[in-house]
Length: 206
Image (cartoon, rainbow, N blue to C red; front, top):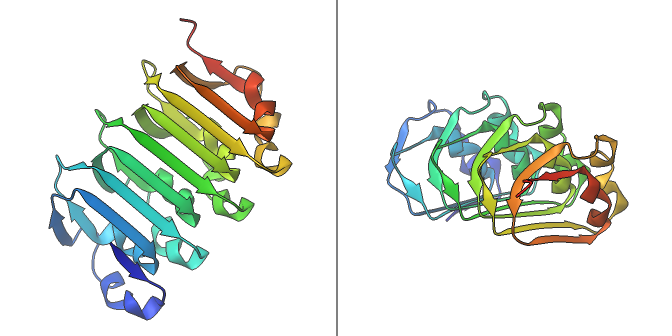
């Protein structure tokens, strides 16, 4: 785990070139605060399988440098559990996940509309997440569901959408019914206002 609550703590690292810090094979990587900004600097083994990648960004400044990078430019390889919290949700388009990845659990947590401002600028179905067994979206993170591209043959064990404010689903309510592909879902859990987007979801006919 790497944690920094001051920009000066990572100032020297941010001066280095992207992919210049070799960390090889990593089982668990947790970056908190300003340390999230150094993610593009890290070079991970191409065939690495990460058990957990957790990124927590509590201030928009934490992700300023990452937002300058191109989409799908930060290689993270295969990831079993991906957890993005608050402003870190906004860098999901920047991550490049292995095409054959099967994610055990994807958790996106955004408690403010500002946390998803950047990601809402992307096109629908433009963020590849591949096969996902469990998907949890909390708060305003529900609003980016149309942006996610899930594998057409995906079988989801659990899809949990939690919206405790009407604003969490405002954007999705503007989409057409049956327009958000989620594939096969064994257990669908919609809490509070999330129930309102049921008609927008398109599940596998079988």
